[in-house]
Image 1 (tube, rainbow, N blue to C red):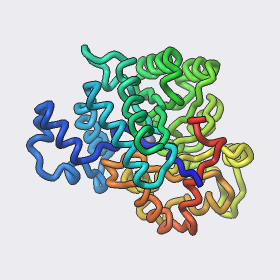
Image 2 (spheres, helix red, strand yellow):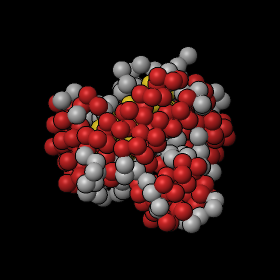
Image 3 (tube, helix red, strand yellow):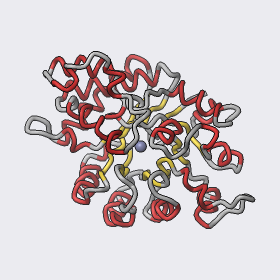
Length: 313
Ligand SMILES: [Zn+2]
C-alpha cells in the first residue's frame, strides 16, 4: 500500500549533518561556529514565532547554489523513503534562493534534479509546491506568475508565512489565475487564524487545507457542524495535519489536546505530515507515534495513498 506526505517544507527539513557540511563549504559563520547543529536548529521549546522563524534564515542561507539545492532536495526525498514514504510533496518559497547566479528557473530545476536522483535510486516520487509568502503581496504575485510560467516543473501553489491578518482573499486574483491554468492549490489556513481563513481558502480554489485543524472551532461540543466544517466534510477536503508543528507553535500543550482524533472520528479526511523536520526535530516515524498519543488508533492508515488527495497525479 502506498504512503504519501503532502505537507513538508524543503527549507525546514535539512539534515543537521548537511547543514554543517554546506556551512563549511560556503564558510557560513553562524553555523560553522556551532558544534551541536541539531540542537541549534531545534525550536521545539521556542516561546515566540520570531524565534521559530529565525532558524529559517540559516537554512535559506545554505540554499543559495544549484548544487546545494539539488543535494537538499535529494536528501529530503531519501529521508522520506527511509520512513517508508512512496509519494513526497515538498514545498518552498522559490525567491528565497534567487540571486545573481541563480534564476527562478534554476531553483526549480535544481530541486527537481535532486528529486529525480532519489526517484532513480529508490523509486520515491516527489514534486514541488511553490509557496508565496503572504506577508509580501508582491512575492505572492510573482510566485503565482512563476508557477504559471513553469507549470511543468511544479505540482501546486500555496501561500505560507504569517496567517493572521493575511486572509486568502487578499490574493484572489493570483489564485484565480493559477486555478485557470489547471494548477492545484493548497492553502495554509486554520493554523494562525480561524474558520474565516479556512472558508476563504476554499472560496479561492484550495483543494486541500494546510493544517486546517482550527476547523474544530466550527464544530460545537455536541458535534454540530457549522457551514465551513460541513463543506469540508461533505467535499472530503483533505486536511494536511502536522501535530508536532502545532505543539511547537504553542497551539496545543500536548498531543491529547490536539483535535486530530475528534476530527478523525467525525469522518474528516486527515493526513499526517511533518511540516518542518529540522526545526521540530521530527520525522514521519515520529509523527506516527505522536498521532498515537493523540488518540489515533491506526496512524499508518492516515498515510495511505489516496489518489484524489495527491497533486503528483
Ligand atoms: Zn507548513
